[in-house]
View 1 (cartoon, rainbow, N blue to C red):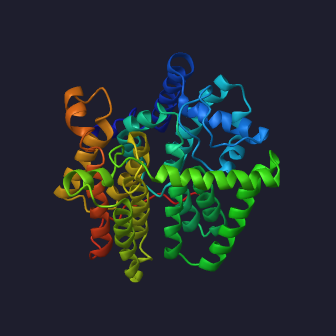
View 2: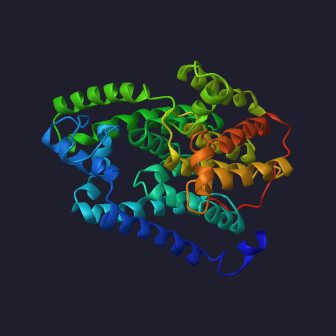
View 3: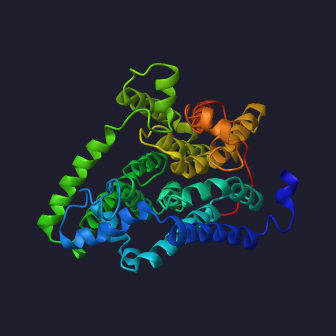
Length: 386
């Protein structure tokens, strides 16, 4: 497998980026000309509803199924896309998010060969994400941009990306956990407040202050409704716990336990200066926000897989690590695809949330490595681009 990635064609960025562009093209053609996209319809009409001053969070069965779950800022942020004709915006949507994810990974302080491996490893998972026309590839690279901003001593931009992610999917706020590993903490918190105010007021370009306040009230109510989700309808640690331990364990108990475990690594202050430790923290953030999300679904796992890759490049790559990585590729990446036997997918991986299992185990492995004596691999990375 390793020798495959060393072949000139398969390690050429132009070929790889072209392949990702082809994935985006396939997703765009399928959604625009064949299947349509209920998810994009939810996004598209949000700008129209914001301008008209009607609730973003009501049901609109003539336009789409389900509800809009995002902040009012979401509609304003993507107004350049939503103002385009529906089919044009939908066609470009997949290129936008695939391109941003590819760029974020390219900026990471990894060797050429590591990046090549990452692009190939995540290829199928990206296709799974794109075919749902959601924002998950962008959510998967928000912590990468936050990490890069902190590494370059740019707390202004770290704060921006965190608030940006929060306004797209609220659990992106987990990336703020990185700020404790870096200096300029007070400056970062100041910028966080500034960006929170700016982005929360951005919808005023399209609506009135009274209407905007009302939309935020509706958003808060919608979040409460969504959080009371059927505990069996998810692909996360919640379903694994309810299936294999007890169905009576509450969502709050699971999330609370996860937060406590997540925060234990802050005790290792002496290791904050190690880039490998900080990359493991990025991995923890990316995986945590998926596996502990009680409404996670298959398409969200591009975020967790991005975290798995961050872990892989700094872990010792022992036999245990290799088993975990292979299981992630088989159960997490391949199981939703036609490359995986349909019988196994329908009878085992979906009913028992096995797509989540490798990522859950890898997250615990990440925590172990962050507490253990440093034995992680120290690669010779490229410099972080300014």
